Image (cartoon, rainbow, N blue to C red; front, side, top):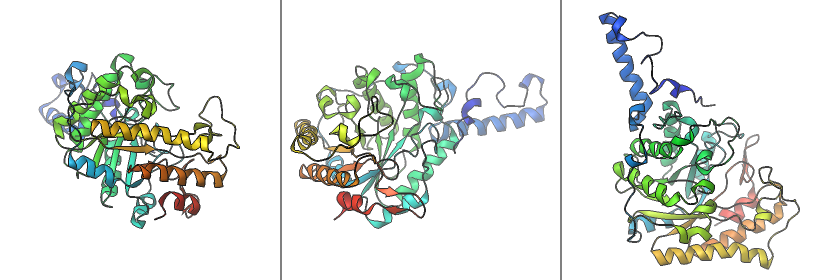
Length: 393
């Protein structure tokens, strides 16, 4: 389990190195040692991004990318979106408040599943906000950065596209905090979002072009009227160190296709758009403990009405993509395990066919937890009927 208290001494007022007094009362020898330790400490606090508390600022320090005349997607963006193919989310691993809080950690055996040619790409959700200092600088814990580095590099070594996103910054949306999630001063919530992106973008600027950055998962709530501004600022800060890296952006209302028309796209050719589709919701989320009020179990799939609801968002997304000239992929869909297994298989195959009939790529939610296509218990094994419905060639 990753510790999140490493950043507690980074960028704070007071003694620069714990256990050492200030220089005015030190000997020359101790002063030299302090300076050396401080240099190491600041490097670790910032990682490759070099963030320190002195970098704290305001939204004005993160100018928005220009908007108004988006040029449409580059050939590289369109090709990458197509190459995502049939992907999977490594969900419930790095996006809990602490890795392991939701029953899973990123294990090498999960990464090795990419050797079987089942998955064409991986979406890697990460909750950065709970691993960063609580101030405006949002200095990301170097130990957590190193952990994410390791996962990214092992995934890239498999030769697939890896979509790295920012996931579950609850205060940004105005949501109730999860267990083990730390609150911060509301005045710094939005600036922290951009400060984290500054560090992430700097950290991974030299990684393979197959690493793609997704600005934020499912903006909603407080972000509904703020999203276009913050998204453009995030694209702007990513572009400082990554002028050509592909970036994924999506609409509000939890990445609903219905909100695509609200997007104000930056003037950037290296963008890919995403939507999520969990329709019919009373089927896909039946029995889910986090849904209030709880949805009754026993819902079947797939009636003509259900198929119509599944199709509507896909048609909206496809039409919007054609209108603005950017590819759109489905970043999440899936059904919770409380549903009847045969119905889940029917739903999964139907959704796969509907998406692919529209020449869109997708990432199933998720690998090995409540929606999982893989059973991690014991020696571990794919749920063969679910895997075949989704990934059968």
